[in-house]
Amino acid sequence: MSKNAEQALGEIKSLLGPKGWTDDEKKLAPRLVEERGLFKGSSPLLVMPANTDEVSSVMKIAFTANVSVVPQGGNTGVVGGGVPNGEIILSLERMNNIEDVNPIDMSMTVGAGCILANVQAAAADAGTYFPLSLGSEGSCQIGGNLSTNAGGVQVFRYGNARELVLGLEAVMANGHIWNGLQSLRKDNSGYDLKQLFIGSEGTLGVITRATLRLFPAPNAYATALAGCTSYEDALKLFLHARANIGEQLSAVEVMDSFAIELAVRHIPNCHDPFNEKQNVYVLLEATSTNPNAALGDLMEKVLSEAMDNGLAVDVVIAQSESQREGLWRLRDGIPEAQKKEGGSIKHDISVPISKVPEFISRATELVKKEIPGVRPVPFGHLGDGNIHFNLTQPENADKQEYLSNWGRINALVHDLAINMGGSFSAEHGIGLLKVGDMNNFKRGDGVALMTQLKKALDPKNTLNPGKVLDSPGAGLAKND
Ligand SMILES: Cc1cc2nc3c(=O)[nH]c(=O)nc-3n(C[C@H](O)[C@H](O)[C@H](O)COP(=O)(O)OP(=O)(O)OC[C@H]3O[C@@H](n4cnc5c(N)ncnc54)[C@H](O)[C@@H]3O)c2cc1C
Image (cartoon, rainbow, N blue to C red):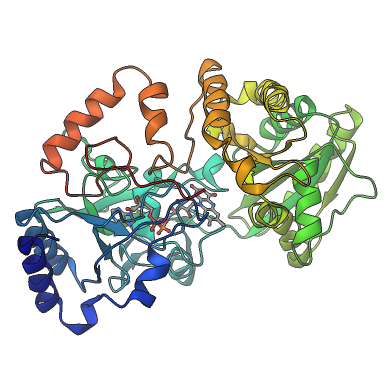
């Protein structure tokens, strides 16, 4: 480390005081690896500023001394975006205030370090609803959710994270504070600057506070699982539900037979409710703000029509909250179950909804030809055309040898998705994992335009370098 950088680190430490930093190796260790263990990095220092002014001062000192900074939230991201490569880690965990919940404006202002589950709970306490919902909600932070433009199981009805934000405060690479906090529904005063920071994975600015959009709280639920013969039938079932349940349909998840098999095998209290194993499972949830809405009756009518028309082979509708939780556990348990089954090559693609069955069929054929015995585990957000086309290693294969196929298989599957009008990154982002794919698959001259933006907002490339866009000096080795 240069003398200049050492001096900057010293300045930062004395600015923040003992509560605001650590270089204890044991405390740093979990911050140097990401969720899937694909990348392992290094960092000399973790800083935890208490407020926006402190974030600004840290960034100013770092900028002046050419010291790079990686923002990190709950570190639940799955593309390595928060893994440091020698940079300082900036955590906003102390900036976790729920500052204001306003049920008239239907907005709430929170610190970026708030855990998502706490944001949801604060909204609920005020009789409102914040719909962003992910498997990681007990540990991910709203700053991380916005920086990755997180998706999850409610996108079908409420949109991605970027659609749930009214205002934002961010600190730029040079320490400048941009205050765009506001609770307006309408503001057409030029460029929508907050959207630059949402989904930019900490490469254009540090999100420090956000004003979020709230909704009326759901008071009635109907949750059902349907078993279908094929993905074509699963799609038709979804279209039938969409046409007949309308805007009350809030989640539409699809799961392959093998995904359910893994969840049942590896996750406690996971049971397939059907007597016979189904080829494809569809989880449907309808919600209403009206406590008297007869959603159960509507769901029953729609699903019995689906059975009459041959779209579903069997259906079950949750009759209690614990049955509802049981159905969701099947869906939420799949990522963990895959981990327990062995090595898994992952894809997070989207295609137009109409092409989901064709994509799954063509991608399955493709990967089975490349790796005999590979076990595809397609599942995901059917209502959004977003499929996690994950591939579990062949039985008895060597895990590391299997994972060495990651790049080659990703390239084939991503190419297929793009050729079908889709995207190689639907909701998880780019991070480090997909930087290489950006040049190959980003549409139009997107990479060139993004590079210009990056240079304008982070001229020294000191903010999360090497993530999203390739940049000189980056190149953290992949740890598989
Ligand atoms: C079990 C499980 C289920 C998941 N399900 C989903 C899902 O359904 N949908 C989905 O989209 N994702 C999902 N994820 C991925 C992950 O939870 C999300 O990407 C989440 O939004 C990341 O939040 P985080 O606080 O953990 O961010 P981190 O992982 O810490 O960081 C992610 C990125 O954001 C940047 N960042 C973090 N905080 C800030 C900030 N304040 N300012 C600027 N940049 C920042 C980091 O530098 C990094 O690039 C899941 C993960 C797990 C483990």
